[in-house]
Length: 83
Image 1 (cartoon, one colour):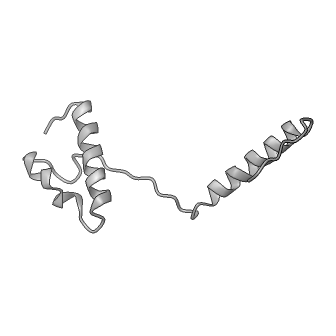
Image 2 (image 1 turned 180 degrees about the vertical axis):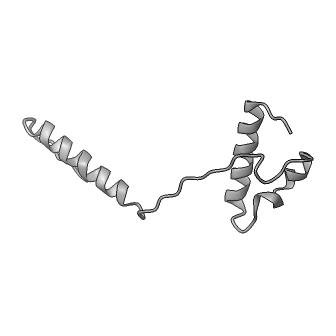
Image 3 (image 1 turned 90 degrees about the vertical axis):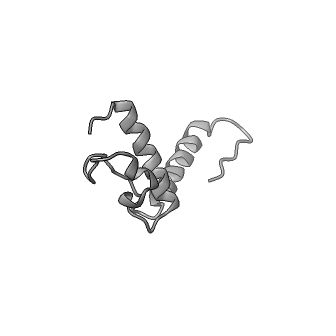
């Protein structure tokens, strides 16, 4: 089965949106899967990124931003950096 790049991207987004809404399903259970005869599980590239640190990156980023602002705004009076 030949898909254009745009078709593959559109299908990929639709599929992952559906999988996010139906976490106990597989991509072969996607209602539109049957609309593309001959498509096998490997025909539509699928990948996902998951946060593995429980949000620690966000806390570290906020700490670094706060430190940066405190260092660069210390000469200005009445500036309080919350974070």
